[in-house]
Image (cartoon, rainbow, N blue to C red; front, side, top):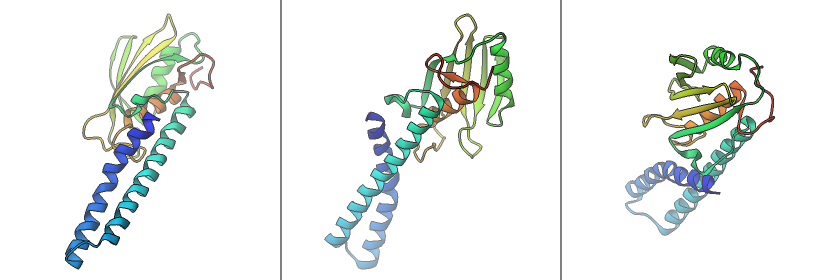
Length: 190
């Protein structure tokens, strides 16, 4: 419910700009604002923001379910750090994950720290903008620490200005066959 409330706060701000522009045109055109017009604009603003928030929340929920990631109240945060499990670990799984990450058209690997960590940019949307990310491998336990950070200039995903790191987290987890629990779903890396 907190994610939906956060989506609504973002949507209210996004929908406010067209409403303010419309009020400006009404003031300019008629020399004043009638109560009926003000009520109509307020109702339109409220309805549009609720619909926008619901669509964004459903999009985030769908991405989370599809990737096996839990949708938490901090899903709209600029930084997402999660300890994930390899869904089907086998010998050499970390090397195969590196290969999969490098093969993705959404990823741009920038540096590697031995066999333990890899830094990259991930493009969660259709635009060229990316989020920064790193993956740290723990081969003994079969876990991966994924850390993704959106920059302040990123305009967002799912119709919001926020939540882009969570979208990228879901995409990376789905691409590499990672999840929060054991035995969930199919892995691309086997």
